[in-house]
Image (cartoon, rainbow, N blue to C red; front, side, top):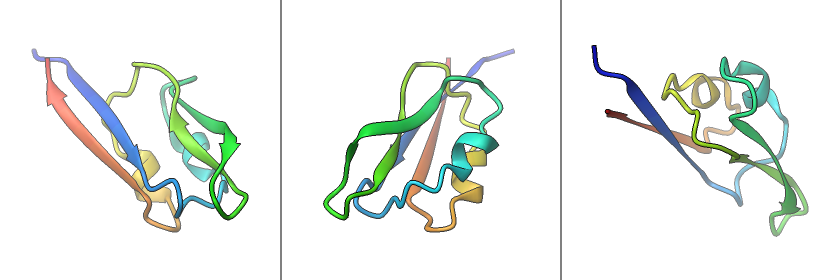
Length: 74
């Protein structure tokens, strides 16, 4: 059975830092709020390590629709 690998792309300027996506992620320590802020002053979500499984839970719950998830089979 092929393992699925995920990757996340975030519209940094559109992210308001609500953190709902972090709670929705089933893999601990995959995404987190950046220490940096966007031009509006919000901390934004970012991928912090290579453990994303491409489930898209973060994108589904994002109220602003700023997360895109990509999947690839390994």
